[in-house]
Image (tube, rainbow, N blue to C red; front, side):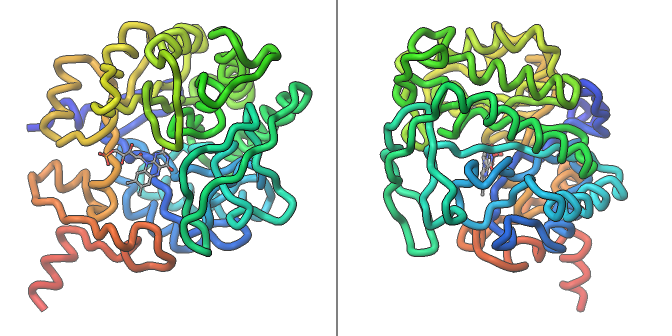
Length: 361
Ligand SMILES: Cc1cc2nc3c(=O)[nH]c(=O)nc-3n(C[C@H](O)[C@H](O)[C@H](O)COP(=O)(O)O)c2cc1C
């Protein structure tokens, strides 16, 4: 019934057994030292039947951290512990890429290590609140990044990408939406720089273009994906003309021969993000946001996207792929345990098989 979703696929250098991708999802279960634990190993291994898992956002440096209990990948210990995750996914025949997420101006000192700063393209605060251990708080004004610092920030990303490969990931995905650092550089509202990284459209693109090229040079373009959502207003992101910005970005990314571009459609933006990407980006597309398996399969057939990613359905259905294959009903996720510590709401959702065994007891 879902033949297109179950057709194997090659994205750059990554072989997928099906076209059902698990979307990146922050779950706030890292240790206080930003490392992952046995819980992560179990969580990702349970979902390894996905054609590709995209990890939760991982910060490349303490400065890149915005949220409490999100994981990092900037020291040996973190790298060793991520290796346990990738080994467990590979043992089950799955593939997994690391989403690298530098939050830039999004964050709060209470979520960050002492001494690590909040930085952004310009000293303009994100006008939104963020969860902290003391509750919701507004975000302070970031320090504007100096021109001379930019190569160092790109290096942090590349070091994390190197560590991701050494930790056994199949590739990396650059988080370039949702108001984080790359998106802050792209958008007129958060980037009012007067150097080569701000002002004109070409200058606003420069950070993302240089960064993506550097990541391709570091791990090979066939192992790099980029995640975008033109017009996404999350975290106070404002751009005078998001369609124009992203059309130009897509044209700049095309010659890099990326593994894929991951596009969130987000109907509320009023922009047809998939059409925009198809018009200006030549390469494989993973599309996302509120797809049913039926609609996803049809999209692959009719519009030629390479794969579809699913987020929330994977939370309560570790065997989401098996359920799609057998048309089994989906379990509902518990929104209250999305970001709470521990196993509850994380690794305790049963598969169809486990649920029927429980019923028989
Ligand atoms: C709990 C949760 C955490 C998320 N964290 C991330 C993240 O770390 N990085 C990211 O790019 N998107 C993140 N997202 C967005 C999802 O990847 C996806 O775009 C969104 O859930 C829509 O897809 P869906 O309708 O299939 O759930 C998150 C979404 C949820 C529900």
